Structures are given as structure tokens and as C-alpha cells.
Amino acid sequence: MAFLEWLTKRKKPLSQMTRSELRRQELMLEKDRTRMLNKITKLGKDKQVLFERGAAEKTPEVRRMFAQEFEMKTSEQLMVSRQLNIRSKEMMTVSRLRMMRENAERARHSGKLGLISEADMLRLGKLIESDAVKAEVYQERLDEILAVGAEVDEGAAAMSGAGQSVMDVWDKMDRGAITDTEEAFDEADRCVRERQAAPEA
Image (cartoon, rainbow, N blue to C red; front, side, top):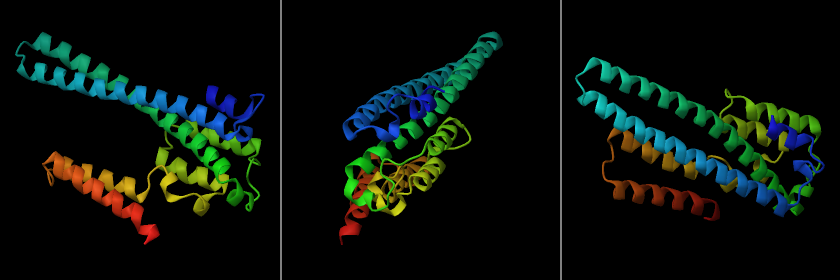
């Protein structure tokens, strides 16, 4: 509940923070999110080692121990992943509000700048804390609540078309359609550059 309380009950609510204050919060959330990502990555590597050791082990009792450790690390990985989902939504919220500050002139025409109600913040808080609401869905709800939708540059979206292109390349690598890492990187880089250049064309 800490973030929800911070959204609505601080002396200076999130919706009234200056651009620099929002940026500081954004950096703190980004640091925390990076820590969680590193933890998930480490757990994944630990699980891989456990799996390989268990596969090579023939003694049932020892193999059972590896299986239990594998299960525990999977549970921890899922728990951290849920926290990461929450942190990603928190960061998205702060980033969007900061962009509204940066685009003050344009946002002022909508009459929404700095006028996000406490009820809206409560709605956001509940969506942030719900494990069922993933970051992509949350982004849509956030846009609706902040009423910025098309007014926000595409690059500000949690998963823009360019970002989805990178995801698609990774999917191809997972399926074995692309096996060379450099080739995959080049394709991802090309797709992102084309996506970003398209609006200016």
C-alpha cells in the first residue's frame, strides 16, 4: 500500500509534483526495477545450473533435493516477477505525469494538467497493485485516466511499435528462426530505426 498512499496521501501528491521531483521518483523506481530484473536473471541462471546438476545426478535422494531447490527458486522468481510488474506500472505512472509536465503547453489545452483527481489516483493505485493487470493493460487504463492518449508521443508508450519489433526478434530467436546473435541485433536495430523514422517521413 506504500505507493498508493504516496499517490494520494502525501503532503504533496504525485499529481502536483514538479517535473524535477517526478524525474527523481522515476530514477528511484528505475533503479529498483533494475535490481529486480537482475534478481530474476540470477534466479534463472541458478535454476539452469540446478537443472543440469539434477539431470546428471543418479541418486534419487540428491536428485529430489535439486528438484526442491529448483521449485523454491521458481517460486522466488515468480514473486519477484509480480513485484516487477507493480514497479513497472508505478514507473509508467510517474513517467507519464512527468511527460505531461514537459508538454505543459500542449497538455494545457486538454485542461487536464495537474487536475488528476484523488479518485483517479485511487483507481490507478488499485490497478498498480493488481497482479492480474499486466503493464500493457495498465498502460491503456493509464492513458484513459490521464486523458492523454494521442497527445503523448508514441515513444513514451510502455510498448511502442518499435519495442514490439524487438520483442518479435527475440521470439524468432526463441523459435530458432534466427540463430546468429549479431544478425538478430542488426534486424532489431533496423526495425526500431525504421519505426522511429516513419512519423517524420
